[in-house]
Image 1 (cartoon, helix red, strand yellow):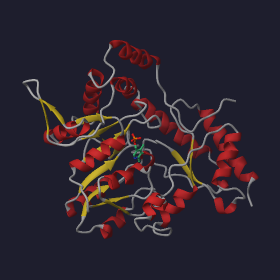
Image 2 (cartoon, helix red, strand yellow):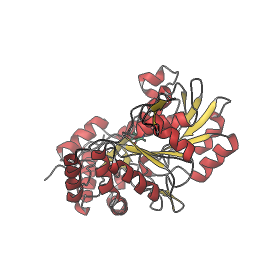
Image 3 (cartoon, protein in one colour):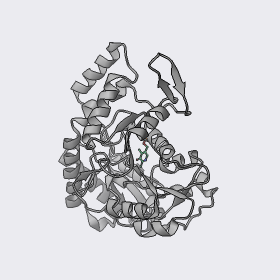
Image 4 (cartoon, helix red, strand yellow):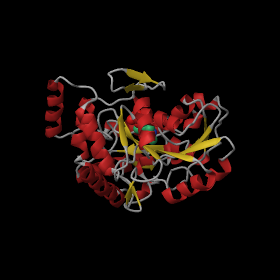
Length: 374
Ligand SMILES: *Cc1c(COP(=O)(O)O)cnc(C)c1O
């Protein structure tokens, strides 16, 4: 049987031909495709300004600068995310202030945010884990009452929504990723959704060395921008992907539903929240009952691998990394994030999977757990 990876992009032949065309055109870096992708994304996000970038990490770095986050500031975020989320805060010279996650949503616990706000807090940086949106009503209520900017790490949220509105189509700044594993991809890439023309102008400059081209053919530089532009080769992939976004999300929802129908709950695994109105099912993550097993998570992953099934880990709690321990964080600080981070596994879920693949994964999980019960 073919190896089933935990994720795989679906790139159609039209897109592959389009990329070949870009490669033959003589203009392969940022150009017409990047501009077109920006326009189509802006349309998708209800007309808000969008800038495409070479990664969501870059988009988050620019967003922090736009929000005025600087040395000595604090930014409140979740300990349970890809480490980019906290790294960008450190790189801005600010302090990541972690707030534990909610056991059910696995997102930042909104009940606990207010007690973490201090005079130095500048912004909230929530993550929609697995594409399950953080409650936007409560999030923006808290931000509004405390005068805080919100930088949505919506890296995983493409195709997700809140009360019928697309994530990114409302709110403050939103950074979205088009990494190979995300719901639509440009291989590497991302975008930032912005609020107004002035912010967009500064974003454009921060994206590429701060350079402004003058009408007389000269240039001016007033801010030290970075190097975050998206190539046309990548943007052409994105144009081909965006057409399929709705179908991809619909297929992910069907597969997730199938997991809930077929998953053997006697295994003792903890399933994600079954949420179909808003979630884009970027990942299907279960928590392993490791206390009951003779194997650790690595042993489980290896046993699944031997059955031809790829399993991912997204993510260990960030505050336990050496870099963050040095800031004074310790084991026990965020019990929910630690429990989830140490037992979570990501099972295969991507649009090209067939229903039988879900059966195969569920059977394999049940077998591996049964064979390794204490
Ligand atoms: C993927 C991801 C990022 C980083 O996106 P890149 O495009 O790889 O830079 C940041 N935060 C979260 C939550 C992610 O899943």
